[in-house]
Amino acid sequence: MNRRIKLFILLFICAAPLFAQNVSVTAKVDSVQLMIGEQTDLVIQVKLDANKKALLPIYNDTIVDGIEVLDMAPIDTVYSDDKAKMTLTQRYKLTSFDAKLYLIPPVEVEVDGEVYKSDPLSLKVETFDLEEADPEQFFGPKDIMEPPFVWGDWVMLFVSLLLIAPAIYLMIYLIRRLADNKPIIRRIKLTPQRPPHDEALELIQEIKSRKSWQTAGPKAYYTELTDVLRTYMFKRFGFNAMEMTSSEIITELGKTENQKDIDELKDLFSTADLVKFAKHNPMINENDANLMNAIDFINDTKVLPDPDAKPEPTEKVIVEKRSLRTKILLGIGVALTLAASIACIVYIVKEGTDLLRSLF
Image (cartoon, rainbow, N blue to C red; front, side, top):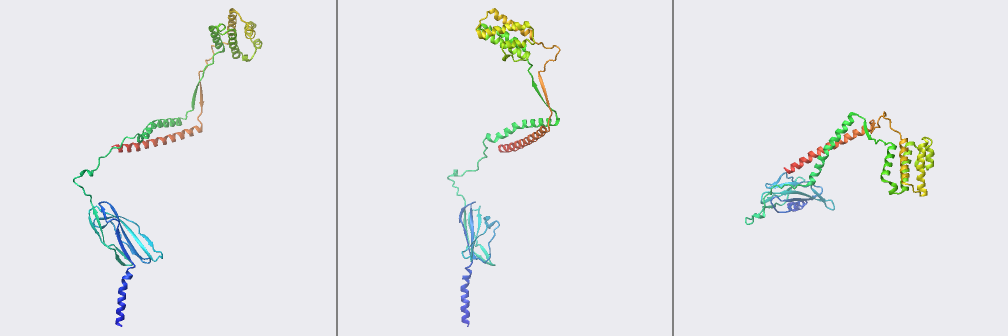
């Protein structure tokens, strides 16, 4: 009987390591050798049954004296195909600023109240080897460099400075126009109309001075002279003499003027018709007589201005009352100009401060 008990105890002791193999803890460092200030990862991997709970270590600042913990990644969990096993992986970001060989003690993981440990690790941190024979291979800190002048950094500032003064002036003008509520006054320059006899006499004097009957021929001379008279009659009497024949003009004049002036003018138009249609070539004295008849007709029929009459105005004033729509537009203009001015000022202050700070 005692023999059977001993055999059972022996089998239990031998089977205990097999049960313990259900949990395994491994730890490794991605790089076991690094330069001072470089970083590496400490990877802890725990394999256990899916129904077990494990507590992995939490390092606050250092894992050992001289090795700093910069970051701790979330735990990565991977299950086996039958969901009976799982693997937990935890990564810690390490660095060191002291060159030496470090011994990382075994990592302890608690699984269902029982502690399991990994193998210890080593991490070698090396520093730079400065050779005195070649001191130029390393350089000290460089002096502060001044940034180059770039027009693109200043162009918007200059544009804002140029726009701010007109914008403020426009805003003040609009505010004053909106506040005074004055009507809008426009002035139009008027050109006084010349009397028709002045224009006609001036044109006849030009014909006389050019001696058109000699330079251009009788036909051109009489055409030009009768056109001046027709234009004068239209402006003076109001009938369209330019579209009337000579006989129609004489008939129309007979309604208003004395017969002596009409007879003289009748001789002029008769001569003009003969020259135009019958190739008549009048004498020089006849040309002069017809020109004088035209001048006498104009002087006899002209209307002199009334000396007591008021002079014609040279300027016309138009007064327009400001409507509600105009007031609303003025108000909107003031608001938009004020907003643009404020934006320009803010931009000038901000950009100017940044540029001066970068320079000094």
